[in-house]
Length: 113
Image (tube, rainbow, N blue to C red):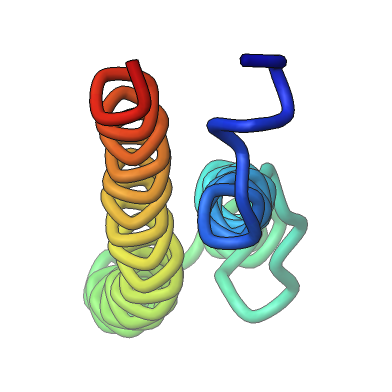
């Protein structure tokens, strides 16, 4: 028995799928936790220029700015959650592909003895 005997096209396909899923999971994990520059959220300069104004105006500006920041954060978190969920599923599929490939190799080794 040679090393090539337990590796058939099914096992090669499972290993290929596992490596592909692992690569895609890594890409999605990096997308989920990548630092991005967002231009939609309020900047410090937007708030600082109102520092010497009337307190009632500052209150209105602050609340609008706070609402814009919360909405921008919700969008960012939704994107991160989407990529993190996709990465988690791809890790599961990769693990199962590796597991089934190892099981197939083990069965072929024990059956052909």
